[in-house]
Length: 169
Image 1 (cartoon, rainbow, N blue to C red):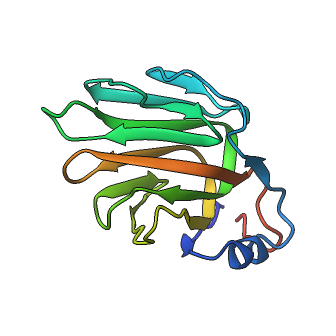
Image 2 (cartoon, one colour):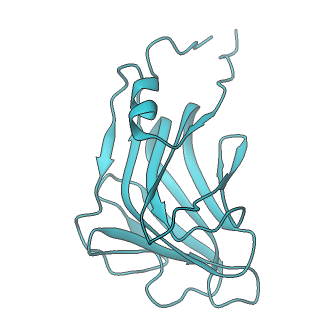
């Protein structure tokens, strides 16, 4: 039989996201290792982050001072069009803390789902965004839906093991 299709559930609270994993192994990248920006880089956790399309600019797709930073735009802007993360093995959950995203401008496509990254936290603080129910995906893509946007992440979490109780088929 075919594997059951998982239902993606999004979270804005880290404790709730962790509880939903029910014992799945969590890998954490605090972006502690500075990395010069480039069209393609590899995070300490083995994720390859690549910017494509448009114009690669400035400090995009780099790590500095404990933060991953990037900018995405639309055709004709001075920014890349897409940022794709390739995971070193299939993942079942993904989370990050982000600031700088504008509601309905930054989209995350993962598996068969596309989610709006709705970061409305003021004061430059980071907001937690997490998803579970991923059916062993190996890629996530960020895309901008409006004018150029600069965003920063200061933590990245993912799980390479399905949570206990996830139907596998």
